[in-house]
Length: 326
Image 1 (cartoon, rainbow, N blue to C red):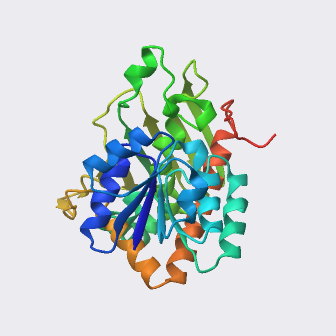
Image 2: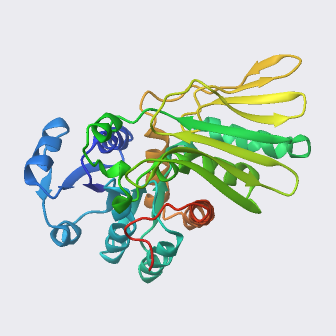
């Protein structure tokens, strides 16, 4: 498939390398607002056509568009790509407000030959699948969970120096909940379902977004806590509790360990590819090439639930983004 990219940061390069390693994609088009930026990215990968205008980019002979622009631009660009008749892989978060889901859903319905997937990479990890099955098997014994994902952002020093990086700007839907919290909300909804009540206690930055925080998800029989941050590092492990037995997961977004600890300890971890985006790239390619409607509907349903929960969590705070509905 001919692949076009929007966004030229490190995560885009990692995805392009993962995608091309599957043999199912070839990078042919790069969009950036600045031609020099697009050219610099091409120099790190390989030759591709450069675009500085989105209409021309979407009018090209692309098969699939990968979107990794600032968060606040994802929904509009995804809808535009679908309208142009392209498949879409959009980095998390696909939307910054749940009301934007309708725009994407409408564009996809008008072009049912085109599918869209949110690139929440950990969902396609073999360890994520193992956890899902284990939680289902032990659901009766489930007593709660703590899901942790916090790491010091590569852009936080720039923020402290007085710059205004997109990831710490309310204009572009920045902050810890929308960037790292997405991973833990995906995990909670996939493993435990949609919570009945939610609350988010953010640690606010002067820019108007959250540097970190603690979220509480309440279910009928259990409670799940999410700990997240972009302005500190932690070695704390995510855990799921089954009474006397605890499943240790490492960081929710990376799942770099998987141990069942009780009377004995069982190491259940499956080795991951060196590039953590290979599994999702392979999954998307198979779904797009075979037009797997069931895969699309399953992942779209999960994405909608996740973003409804994210919206509800943000609704318990004062965090406002530039493209929120008025």
